[in-house]
Length: 275
Figure (cartoon, helix red, strand yellow):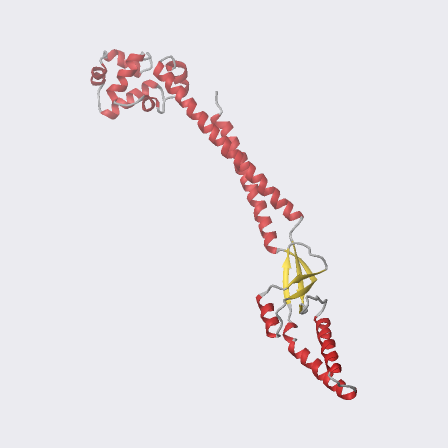
């Protein structure tokens, strides 16, 4: 749309005739006709009077007017020049916002892509460990590799006490066997399985203090208050299905964000970087 066409459109929207608008502006009808037919360009004062007559600002007046006409025919008018400068500054702000936003999307996309790609190449491994028993700590702080070693130690002490009490021969063997069976029954609650998994390889075997609440309860039920340990053995390794799903999601998200970022940079260069 040319400037003259926009001026005519505004007049018609108001329901004014050419003489009425000419009178409102304070010019001859013939001059208004030249303006509407693009045979003349308004002076700075004339442009200001046109704005006052329609009670609009310069942005509204130049809206939909062909940009090439504004730059070639009207740019010499200070008010129009100021409008163009404001439009340029606005475009530059939009350009910076688009560029920064698109760059952030690219960075996020590349980050997610890298995480997903590396996770697919090196998925997280879960190490499954199992312990078959709780091994009590001795009264004097002794530690044992197996529950049977602890029971044997307790049985040895009991047998020595029996010998010291004067038992011997068949009677000693009979009482000793009975006491050993008592120990087996007393500590049977300690023969309980426990499982744990780790993302870190702890070795084929490792020993750790037993801090599980149920283990402590089992120790106390057997009359043991010095704590215990558990020996864990690796029995299985597996890929973490959750990490694989997350890696796939991260990979797809990375590609999507990267594509958005690149498209945003294209739009920024295409529509905002204009001289």
